[in-house]
Image 1 (cartoon, rainbow, N blue to C red):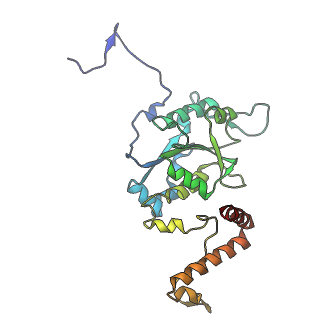
Image 2: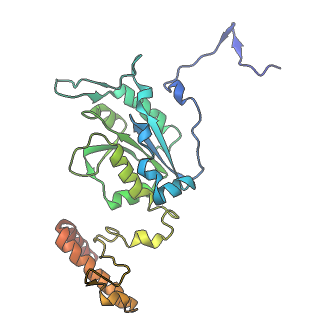
Amino acid sequence: MSDGPSISHGRLAISATERPRELMTDRPDIAGAWTARIITLFPDAFPGTLGLSVTGKALQEGLWQLDPIDLRLFGQGKHRNVDDTPSGGGAGMVLRPDVMGRAIRYAQNGTPTKRAKWPLVYLSPRGKPFTQATAQRFAAADGLTMICGRFEGLDERVIEHFDVEEVSLGDFVMTGGEIAAQAMIDATVRLMPGVLGNDASAEKESFSDGLLEHPQYTRPAEWEGLTIPEVLTSGDHGAVDRWRRTQSERTTRQQRPDLWAKFGQSSEKDK
């Protein structure tokens, strides 16, 4: 019995696919590992700094995995165009909806349909600000797909059709979303069990309880005439905790009055 393809009327059965030939290989999948799929025109930008330090070690150990997806492979025509001029006129170029649609469908293949389990995120300056709470939400999911914008942005129909969540790194404009994606993934991955080595480290950092982190000190005991606060070398852990809390509140009040106001509001609600 032949192991070859079945033949009907002398012709092979051929079915159409939106997946480019360059992507016709199965992507390695580490069972249970949180995964970041990144749609980008610059896949070589990854892992970038994510391949260094604790995030890089965790990546090598399979605690999470990274899957950059080259948007150019889904482009139109011989030159694989991914953009076109803005409707209504204007400067710059806009990422095409048909091209991005094919890339998103490929990226979302095999992922949970519920956005809480697998967010679909477009990195955009008009999105909601990325915060520690956002990182915690992303870390609690099975993974996420990020769309790195370029040029004048993404056709609005893509955002509407796929129910894309827009997230911003801050109130400024960057050339593309790749650096923002790395920053957000770093903040997310480090919250996962086993990445930092000491899970308590993430629990006591800035923003974990709505406040900025307290000042940190280490040896030598005196440097340039400046000494470590005596309470930190007293051995009184209760006093150390109280000092750190006071310093966190003081730093937040002075440097981030917006956070201090939110902290005060949440404290009132808890009473």
